[in-house]
View 1 (cartoon, rainbow, N blue to C red):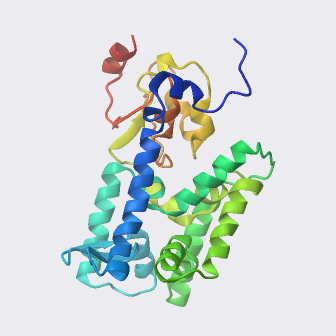
View 2: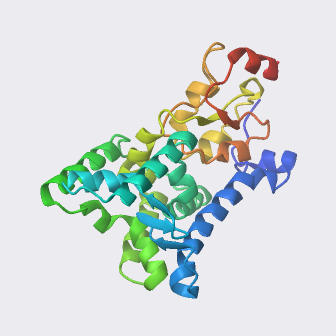
Length: 294
């Protein structure tokens, strides 16, 4: 059957499931991302200090320390041994992402994801076609460079240019030059190379991908026999290369998207009219899967 090249991505899902269900996970992610920013704003704006600190290191309800494990790792490379509360905070956050998936940070927490998602949407609307592509290994190179620089300089060099730190600082304190860097990321993703920042360059994405390699919660193509090859999931996925092994693998291959690069954003679930995908644990039994799709 010939494909309708003018079909809007996710259109069939909207028709079959309704607009709300076809955007459920996207709306939940935006609520999470904006809600987290809002919690950090409560203190400086309204004097309600539910969380003190920033996304790198914070204290919740004056009790629970939370530390970005990537910042913690950089700190260790500077030769500085953090205090015990910082270590506890890093362990708490690392354990959380080891369960739910490291790159859940990228799709459910990181505010830059809103910027890159908007750039990708504009790119699709304008039908921007560019041949430039960065190697996905580039982010691992920048991850290594950030650690080496921390070791050599004794300074958290990456945090000086980290756009997550920049966007939180600018939202809290004022407009500033940092917005130029964030705008540059938007332009890069929209007009230069698709998903260049999060998918190819960001060292934080590389770190959280490694952290979540063995995570328990995974997206599963549990109903893959119902796939009609519409390709909508590949079109919206920020890491489309992770889908094929689970969706188009052999009958005996696992339907679990095992790659640590999967962000568990669940957009594949939203746009799939055939309900091929779901979020479950990684220990899917192939026999039970066969019964589900038979």
